[in-house]
Image (cartoon, rainbow, N blue to C red; front, side, top):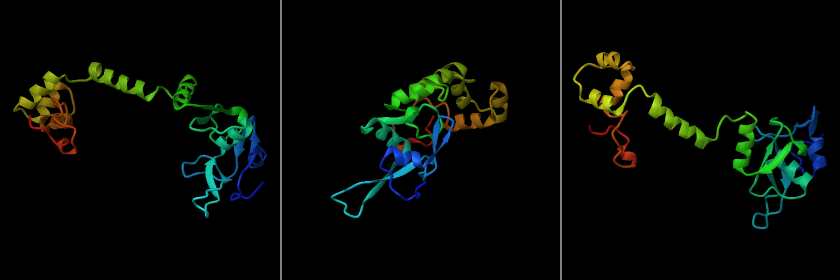
Length: 185
């Protein structure tokens, strides 16, 4: 196996830096700061004469070497879910949406972010302990925080936040960062 600092230029070089674990080729070379396999490839930058190499995901290099074409702007993702795997048979190229759909189908990602946001909105509408009318009553009330919390069955910190205008606001007047403080009731 080569030195960790040596450049990788072919599928043979990639396989030489891997060990076979079942069907997977587990990368034994360097890793990036995000803890994913990374390899160094030689490059020529005419505008930067001192730069002779760059770091790329090892799985991306394996896919490109096996398919004889660049990944381009598409993502290369693993179908075996082994983060260290560089076996080209376990790699696919696709868009971010295709990768998310694949992960969702295989139970690795429960839902797309847009689906999670719509579920959160629906839960707020159907599962909230208070309504906007009750929040208005709390703001208008002169009772103590503890008494109101007991009456509405919520935590006293929520009552305090409602009274301060930090929770259950009527509307946000402007999107400026200066309006993030408490709004006048």
